[in-house]
Amino acid sequence: MIQHIVLLKLKAGTTEEQKQALLEGLVALQREHKIAGIESVSGGDNNSPEGKTHGFDWGFVMTFVDAAARDAYLPHPEHVALGQTLLRPIAVPIVAAVQVGK
Image 1 (cartoon, rainbow, N blue to C red):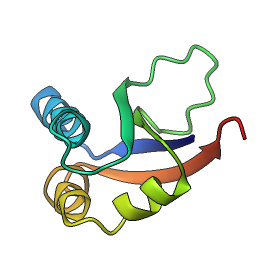
Image 2: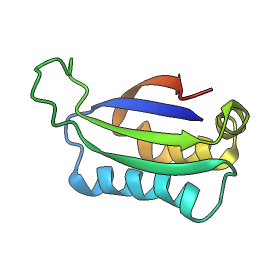
Image 3: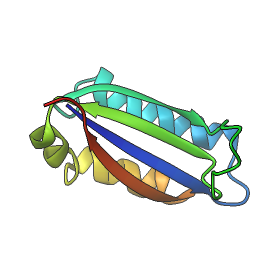
Image 4: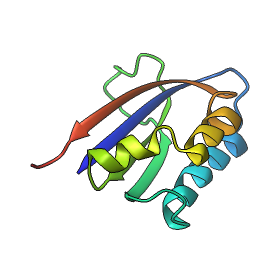
């Protein structure tokens, strides 16, 4: 299983509606089976009390069944379009992937 973790530095003027549209677009990739191998999607505002956010104020996590599913997602047209229309206009991302289990 792969956890695809994306943290965002939101651009000035980003609205709640834009954040919600991004989350809904991400969830739709899984819920509507637009891309195979996505097990779950969750996201929202960073509310860490540690004071170590470094300006990353929103994020999401996608769980993939395996690395192959994640690798197929990355160039998938649905993913690329979502990034261009909903993510890039509002944020600068940092991405990590974590192997969970064997």
